[in-house]
Amino acid sequence: MTKQLTYAQKYYQKMKAKELGITVEEYQAMKGGSVGDMKIVEKKTISFEKVQNLSNLGINEDMLKSYKTGLILDKFVSYDEGFPVGTSMMISGIPGSGKTTIALHTLAHLQKNNKNLKCLFLSFEMSRIQLFKYTQRFPIFGCVKTLVGTDYINDNTKDVVEQILAEGYDYIVIDSIAELLESVRESTDMSQKESEKWLIDVVLKHNEGKNDRSVYSSFLLVQQVTKGGVQVGSQKVKHMLDQHLELKRDSMKDGGGLFMIFSKNRGGKSGERWSYSLENDNINYGYIIDDLDESTTSDPKQFEVIVNRSGADLDLSVLN
Image 1 (tube, helix red, strand yellow):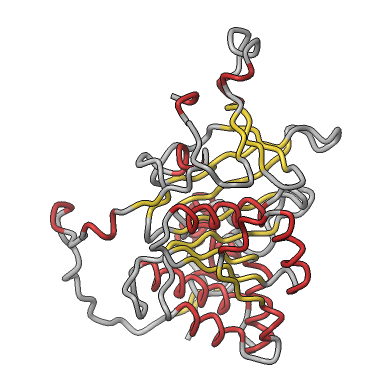
Image 2 (cartoon, rainbow, N blue to C red):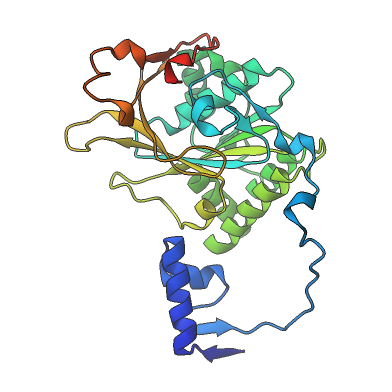
């Protein structure tokens, strides 16, 4: 049963869409409706047992842990200066900005510096040969357990992802959201909306420790962005994440310098830009762009931080 929306309902949808940064049509799709219609569902009794005082939310100490990579990212990702458990981050950027490299570099350092962790790389972008060459460039990547999507081309991608994640992993990189969802849709005949809901449900389930090891999984989700800076797919997945790290250029016209910025960060600082560059076999994290002025540019060593291929812990005191 459907009915025509009233003016008040249309106005409300417009305001909610603006608040979320999406179109009215996308908001209606999120809510299960369609343009000009509103789905009418049967009223049911809702339990409010989970509504508690903030002092009594049943959070245990394992849900508050964070782990360090030894990279400069630790300084920015959270106020604890480490990567929290049970959270989800999107890494997006223009083609060639190093999304996969930075995500995998981070995962490898989490694994190398925390031997007790179980880390997993789900690759739906590259073939086995491409990944081998990638690891030759960055030897530290070799310590990360990797599932290559093309190895399971004859299997149902939804089942593949659900079954391997059920083993329980602490930190997981998915490269990329767009390729994973496309493969899931091909395997299951899901719609875009259904596949996005499936991914959100999977991420939240493992954030909450619902796996064989009862670990609060954290996800680093790589998202494709067009050359014009437009995110591929809908905004629905992005809105449920805890952090959004964007990789950008100062200028697209003259190949301006690359920089990172957290446009969203529920557990740490956002809005600070810092430079980086991709070398043949390492990543150079440079300086905090917003801190530069005439009094500091004369001493670039004050800000320069080089991440070497060995993954050794770095002295971050220059940023204090």
